[in-house]
Structure formats: structure tokens, C-alpha cells
Image (cartoon, rainbow over all chains, first blue to last red):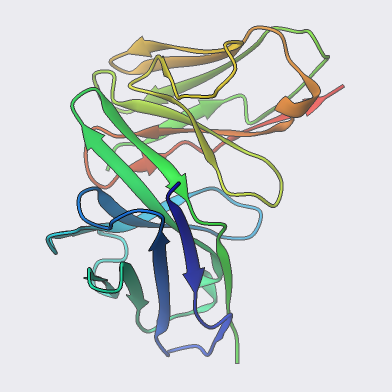
Length: 120
Length: 107
């Protein structure tokens, strides 16, 4: 079955760029919306944005100026870059598959999540 | 952005109890609403989509209802493994937004 695995540094300095990669195994990255969601410690969930396998993107306006999501179909991976990070960006970051077809909309497969701390 | 308001923020119930969680959208979202369960230290899991359709493998004690602005997640007979936090998500318009969560504790 399809599995997602996040990878990247667990510690990022303030003002630098957070970079994470999600590897999709057990299935193709073609079709579906590949999404990043984050969760600050002890808090709720925030949708960051998605990339469709074709390359089209949609970002949360609250982060839009700092976010870039890209896809590498040859490697079956998609990535998140978040620039100019502050302590407020400390969170668990999840990569997630979103299904959006007639009658079925939802985040059906999640990675285990990776904790990223912003600190000097 | 569409605001999703969940209530209560937490509840304590006994095994076998019927539990109801509500989610209200700041504007109509048709039935484009999902419910997610998150256990401590784990990623969320999809329980229900399009307001009332059970995801494959989810026990039938979970059910969802509602349309427009008001939605409900019901657990008909609470089990010990249902200790978790539950989130609603509106899937109607971008940015997608989650409710604040409801933490269900077992008495």
C-alpha cells in the first residue's frame, strides 16, 4: 500500500529556510494532491498547501509569501521549503495525500510526521 | 478563510456512552466536511468524508451528519481505543481549514 515518509533537518535556525522532502512508496505520485500540514506542539492542524502531480500549487495565504512546494515525479517525491522561519514555525510537519474526486474528498494517507524546531 | 468552530473542546465519557461532537462553519460548505481522529503521538486518520461517508475500515459506531454550516460526529458506543482528539476539516474552499479539535477522554 502507499506510504509516505518525511525527511529533513529537525533543527533550523531562525531566519533560515526549512526544507523537507516526502517520499511516496508503494504507488505513483501521479494523480492526487500532495499536501503539507503542520501541527505546533500541543496545538491544532494547519494546512500549508498542496502540489498536484502536474505541478500546479495552492498555498495557505497566511504562509504564501514564504512557501514553495515542488514535485519530482521521477523520484516519487515532493518537497516543502519555508523561508525566513521563526519560532512560530516550530511544529510537526506531515506530508499527506489528498484525494479529490467526485464523492470523495479527504486526506487519506499521512506520513508519520517529522518534528522541526526553529532555534539558534 | 472559512472558520471552523468545534465544540466541546474536550469531554470525558464512559465506555459505552454515546458521544457527540459538533462543528460549525462560518459559511455554507455543502457537505464538504471530513472528520479525523488523532491519537497521541500519531498522525491523524480519516474517519468520515463528505460529512457522512465512513472511510474504509472505520468501525460502524462512528457516524457523521450535517450539511451547510452545522455538522455532527457521533460515536454510538464509546470504546477505550476511541481516546483521541477529533478534528473536523472543511474541504469546500481554499485555504482548507480545520476545527480546533475535541479531546475525548475516557472516564
